[in-house]
Length: 365
Image (tube, rainbow, N blue to C red):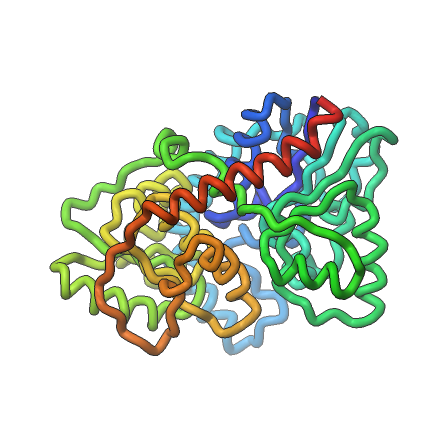
């Protein structure tokens, strides 16, 4: 069976490219041929632009220009690391697509939409027809979503009507959060299955095959925070002092602190190595939480007190680790985790999620 995967593979975001790789490897492991369809809409590509001064006040433009020039080398190095990963680790389709549908390509037996926040209309600047399966394909082709995420549930009535029409494009729907599953049921009477984020579908040993170890001689606590950086660093410094470790910060994007932080240029492979070799992890990111669990590391995941918390809350509840989800204003003690029961639960969830993919792709193999 030939499968086309549609996801945020071109975003220069660690979670985005690594979940793409994991989905690809999982579907390939089920015995299918898979292409990551090289769909690159403007709203993803523009994230790579080093400087965008459009709509910025004149008083700010000069400051931003200087900062951009200051950080140019580090941003270029990180960008190159992501581009290399995307080109070497992902089986991209032969044709690249921008802001236009690919209905002319009818060679796929199935389309898998997801994972990641492909249904977050704030990120996609409105409904992106492609990620909602709203494109012409071979009549016999199936369309499924796998671990699709949405985050924003405050939709207007007209948006809900549009969403309902798009949901009808799918033969089967798999979502990442329990909240989205309930939202689809209560608002549209549509049944969805909660499945694991793809990063959990392949084993720790599989991630080790592509990881790159950091050149850090001292034991360290890793901070990977999308927001709440100050709180995360405060907690990390307190814990580091108690175990005589240093603090390493990996940021979601390169900023003016780049010259003082060599790890801001980390490639996706180096990202994995930093998690694999950390003594402890502090994060406010879903995928930061995911890789802490995958590598069986002690960690704390910081609540953001918003809908963004749904992502971490779902997986932590399922794995019996909800006590690791902490408020930003506390300073916890160093605590290890007994992963025996967690790993058993994760294996069951992994098998269920693979079964979802296998059963939905089985008829077309």
